Length: 84
Image (cartoon, rainbow, N blue to C red; front, side, top):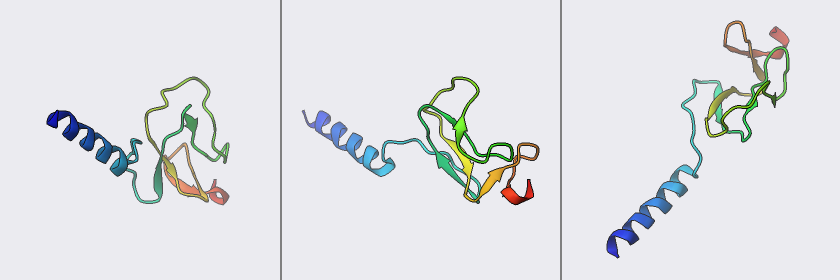
C-alpha cells in the first residue's frame, strides 16, 4: 500500500513538473513545440505553421524558430522573413 502511494505521488510530481508534455532542447533563438497532429514549421516558402505533406507522429517535440523569424530550408538557420 505504501509503495502504491509513493508511486502515485511520484507520477503526479513528474506530470506537474514537466506539465506532462515532452520538450526538445533547442538552440538559442528557437523554442520547443509539440503539435498533435504534427505540423510543419514556418519557412521562407510558407511563413505560417502549416500542414505536413504526409502523416507523422505527433508525440515528437520539434524546435521552431522564435517569431518573427522563419527557417531557411537551405541553411537550416532561423532568419527574418525579409532576408529569405
